[in-house]
Length: 374
Image (cartoon, rainbow, N blue to C red; front, side):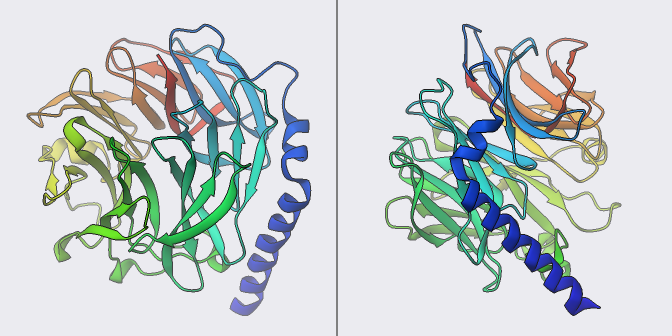
């Protein structure tokens, strides 16, 4: 029975890859709505993947007030988003174990570009542009070799694949480029997966989570921070940049629900990891699971969203003091806003942490939201 299931899963992966390669950008372009995917004149613009009421998936932009601007349909469910600092190109990565990423030019001067994962790899749902916008880095899985990889793509040449280098860990998920562009910070979640087994976690007893700093030019390891043995079930997942080169990370715990592990922390190049000392009741409210993290550098705030706990937590970065804990059913994505944070939810709500209520959209937002402008 297991052999049949493995064969079926691998066959589906290959069939989907063949379809994407055959269809390419032309297929993606035919799904774009008549209206241009443009940023218009809204003072602040966000983007998130979504699922429409008819079950189709897509990518949308919306204002800081939660009003939908434009939409582009996608071949399947998306997860994380990367924004080019050079021209605003937005890349949406398929949900793990995904084999496509879609690059959208917000001015629509170029048709969307569909990237297909190469044989033996799948995307892990996140990526990051280099600071000059010329290269796109994507977290990928060498699933037969059981090692994380970083795929490198030429953003100036139709996202042609240039090569790859190791993530120096298992199960890389999110990544972010340092402010000076010298390093990539990668959250190696430490969880072994294989497309033959879908999204199953294959090594929970032997997890090896870590955070790595990698030279963006050479792909060489600069430093690696393995989590302590007592926290080997704490999967490092999502990242954001703070002040003075500080990298903030958020985690999802794969151990007993009754445990109270640290769920977020930070480090800077040359420093050891430090964890936020959240109160037990906050960790309990987060259900040992942070699905997204965002830093509001202007206000010195950390935002943590938990869909499992149905809660959003705002923390003062300098002191680690919890400033606000707010119930948000199905809280998913979080991004800095002009005051506090903007939060999306699986049930279609777009809300701000500095005020009550929110705007309910006719689509279900996915795990992450990014701020494009404003």
